[in-house]
Image (cartoon, rainbow, N blue to C red; front, side, top):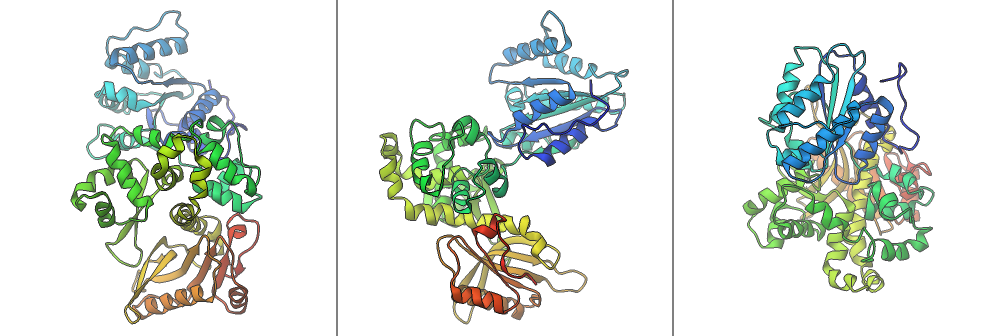
Length: 503
């Protein structure tokens, strides 16, 4: 039974305040009808950890499905449900129809408080019992008319499967009152979680490799954290590049866990193409030796699995680039996969010593650009002197100079009511380069070109983001003129205020 007061988030759950509040509100909503929630997220995000804590705080029934036959899964469900109900004998359901009917009957009228039910790893059950979503739909529809206090949460890690539960003509479309995706920690939260926030240079490198996946620190590495920036190289060799480490093959397992992925070699080739800098559809197709039309399906599957994201060019309609969303997979494709045989034979130190340029160009650099955009969306948002528009990147073409100016971080406000679109921020991000006046001049030229095309740039800030620092001349220029801001690692991690000011 639930206590009258609202239980707070358990102290042992790091971050996840938004997710906890959403789940708690779902469970406690004063609604006399059955409610359905969908919880998804890639493996290792802590979904099970979060949902078990929810059941412990609010009471209810938790069932974690496993891979098995339909008969075995139904038997396991009946045994778990009987234990929850206090029955000394396991329930023997002939069909899933019987099991789902009984489950909903447990929250019949007469109960004062909602009854929480969590079915974890739901894709395992849906694979062996394809009619399960339809059976749940029938009961949900029934108890939209009849009274019920059931709060049913279906959870799973197979993103394509979980996303399909509410898509198109799926039986459960339109039935869910909650759709929660448990995502990796943001870069600042990840730094706090790994306890490296006091060393932004280390935090940035660590996040470029393992991202914000919580299980990698505790379950995989038993809290083996690099002691300092000087320890980072040794840590990489012993924790990621060592065949004895659970992280060594994790990138392969993450890809293999997606139900819609059949030809793993093809998908690895697509990801390798992106990791090597071939980020357009044509570039990816050319790299793997296929036609563009032939890679539509793997691209769609990787997007549905939240392993790949297509980012639109904010300056050129119809143009886009792909980016790998999971840092460990990008690190694997860029650094590990090309030297896999040597790594398996224990040559981690030799491989890593020769990977500095590749790590900077293919891993840390693109990752730094994404972090800078995350900064503008999050901590840096309050520094903007205007309402936040679309955040992204793109290319501004300079026809006079016959060149393209890459804008890594841009904030654009769409035009409306006769007002032209406005550029609020144009930024360039460099991971390993000390930025100078030339970078600022290039951004200024891009601002001029956009203004000539009718974009309002009257309040457009020019931003330089660098992981290596800024020249004295650039610092002096940023301090002298308005509308220029310099953001380094200390600023990204909140340890100092950006040089210059957002207008």
